Image (cartoon, rainbow, N blue to C red; front, side, top):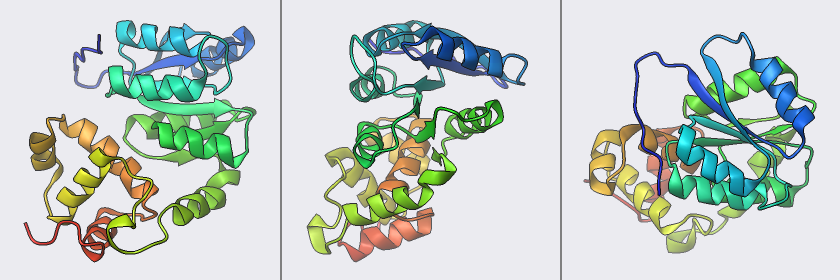
Length: 226
């Protein structure tokens, strides 16, 4: 079973909150109450419940903790990316270690916030995630840059060892100079999904914009002239 997206112009951002502590879920719901164009459409207390609820409520953004009973957050992020690829997974956790951070990003998270963040910070993170952007707690920015820089140190065909086969294919198409619509047609993905995945791809290969990604792809022998 997978999500069925029903689009509506100017619809509010649909937010699913996933944490095993009710006080955290209540706090996020209270913090988002009254925020323009953000609607909390569901809550879940485990990774397994999050996946099941996401299929029902079709969120735009899933705000998720990493350590919960009944399936942890990292595995839940992987499953959410499979069953509801339009949803963006934004981590909200106490864990600042590199293993948790990098594991979440490898699983498909689009950002990483730390508990203790103010309501305004969470709001900005949710809006950024919904817009297809990457978002990180301020104190993690340099570590994220270094993590992804270290992830792709060698030239040639193995220059991008952290990328999945699908991501390598997408990078190849970027190297050919194709736009998101054309890439979507070739991969069978919606333009919004392509935009989201390109955003993650840029971060994973350590570049800041599409032009730099095209250059990196061509330097690695991927793409070339379309």
